[in-house]
Amino acid sequence: MRVTVNRRAHFNSAHRLYNCEWSDARNSEVFGKCANPNFHGHNYELVVSVTGEIHPETGFVMDMKILKDLIRKEIEDQFDHKNLNEEVQEFKTLNPTAENISVVIWNKLRNKIDPKLDLSVTLYETPRNFVIYTGN
Ligand code: NI
Image (cartoon, rainbow, N blue to C red; front, side, top):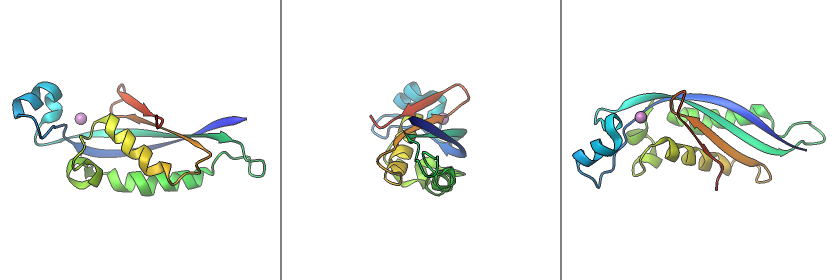
């Protein structure tokens, strides 16, 4: 029996979408208001999903306390109330789109979670816009 357990988390971050190889005009054309040089913020909602067999002794797929602490340490403490472009190493050279943020989060968590478990990251940038990354 493979079951998916999910943990919801949250962080507020500022970002700016920008390709440094492009002119300001081209950046504005492609990224619109998101290219604003003064940055803007989002209330990101994160759902981390872990799928695997139920452990016969614990009845857990994964101890949710461990997952909660992992998300807090690896993601929330790193991203919350930060300017992603300027304060998070991964985005010094990577455009902090929801797509790229979801991949960075997945990579940060993947090597901390038992390889026998599948990992999926769902990231809401707004209540209506969200992305999913499963490592493929
Ligand atoms: Ni934005």
